[in-house]
Each structure stands twice: as structure tokens, then as C-alpha cells.
Image (cartoon, rainbow, N blue to C red; front, side, top):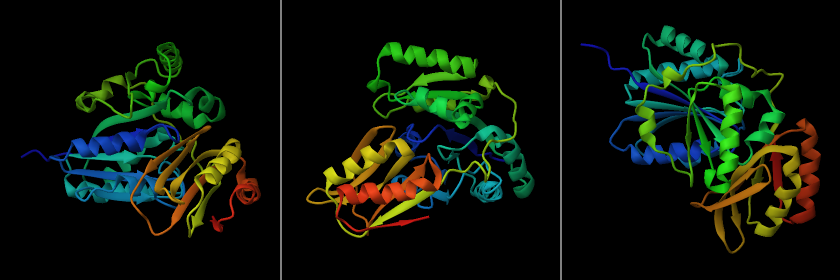
Amino acid sequence: MEEKRTKLYVFTGFLGAGKTTVLSRILQESKEEKIGVIQNEFGKLGIDGEILKHNDIQMVEINRGSIFCSCLKLQFVQALSEMAQYEFDKLFVESSGLGDPSNVEEILKASEMVSGRSYDFRGVICFVDSVNFLSQLEDLETVHRQLKHCHLAVITKTDLVSEEEVQNLCKVIRTINPVCKIVESANRDLDITVLEEDLLLYQWAEGEETTNTEETKPKTLFMELESEVEEEGLRSFLEEIAPSLYRAKGFVQFKGKGWNQVDLVGKKIDLQKTDALEKGQLVFISKIGAAVIKEIFAVWAKYNDTEMKLRN
């Protein structure tokens, strides 16, 4: 009898492109299947892991770096090896927004050697933020690599831009990856039937050494808030600090308004109601290295009188 192989999907895409949102939808719509998730955060705190929690989903979190980097690659191989024993129908790997998946096939081969089991690798799916992608592409080689090594590009947030902007984005995608399949996602939704296609038909680039290294790893910090904050004060803080960050996200309790999930991508601040937590937490990924620490303290004190703690 032929061994059942778990279908493996790797999600990439820069910070805030919508990977977690779409994955959450997929999990909700796939309740009849046995599914596993390996979730990778660049910061110390597993913010996205909190969002993805489902009682019937087996999930492993790997934090504090990229799973494609030598600093965490062995942990990723071990997680893949352990998950292979569960015989899932599908396993989703949500990599960090700063992850460069150029070496993903090398990692899958290492996992097979360790566990003795192979995955039915279904492809790399890159989420492309239609609002912020072009500016992100100018900043980081990682964004270029994510698209270069994908089999399917999902253009997200198309409800927030014009059709002309989407068509222009498609042209840019084609200059980087001439063959990947391209689909659009509006209002945080995706037609998941695309996952049943043979995405490996859209292979373009050969594997290569990842750009993720200890030397290129951005500075990450997290803030703890023991009490409520004013929404206006937090917004003003995030708006001023935004140019120095790749991303900020977490959970806070607003005075008189309850708990909210906070997401800063580019200049856009997104707030969503969420379940109560023990304390507020925010993760920051810095564009300017450790210099952001002094700036965070100064800007926080300018708009907020709530005490906070900042940690590495």
C-alpha cells in the first residue's frame, strides 16, 4: 500500500501582506481535513500564533528569526520531521515576512533524510501587498527573492487599489517571475480551490543560498503594557515611529474600547476587536537597527502616559 504523503504549502510574502489572514480563512474552511501549521515569527512573541489558534489544529511556532536562515534552519528541519509523523492531509508553513525561501527545497530534502518520510510539496505561495509592494521592493532583496522563488503569486488587498494599479503590479511581477500563476485576493478572501492545482508546473528559479543570515537579521523589540492605553495616543505614536519600522503588530487594551489587535504596515494602522488577554504586547521590527530603541522611548512619552517596558 502506497504511503500517504502530506501536501505541503509554503506561504511567503513581506510583512503585512495578508498571509495569516488568508491562512486563518483556509483553516476555517477546511474543518473536515487534518491540518498542521508551522508558523514563523521574526519577533520573540508569537503574535500570529495567537491569531491562528484553532482547537483542532496542530501548530508549531518557530520565533526570533527566519526559518530559512542558518540560525533557525535546523529547528525548521526538526519541525518538518516531527510533523511528518502525524500524517496530515495538509501542512501549511507560514514563513516570516522577512523570510527568503530560496533554499526551501534543500531544507525539505534534509527533513526527508531525518524523518525517512517525504512531503508532497505543492509549492511556494507568495502574498503580494498591492498597496505597499512597490515601495517594499525598493527596500529589500528579500521581497524580490520571495517572488522569484514562488509558484503562485497572490495579489492581496486589491479592493484598496484601482484596476490599473493591479495591472501595473502584474507587469512588475512578470519582470521578476515570468511563469508563476497570478491570482487576486480582495477583502481578505481567496478562492482556495487554487491549492488543488499542480502549482509546481509554474517553477521558475532554481534553488540558491538564502539571503537570510545572522548578519542581515533586523533588530526586533517587544513592548509590554500592563494597563489600558488611549487609542489616540497609540495611533499618534505609531504614525510618528512608522518610518523607522518595517512592521509593528500586537494586542492592546484601549480605555473604554476593550481589546484590539493592532497592525502597522507602511503608514496604515489597522485595528480589529479581539479576545481579552492578560496584558498588552506589541512587536517592532526595525529598519534602523538598535537606534530605534531611543526613538521608541521618546515618541511613546510624547503621546502616552501609560507605563511600558521595552525588551529585546
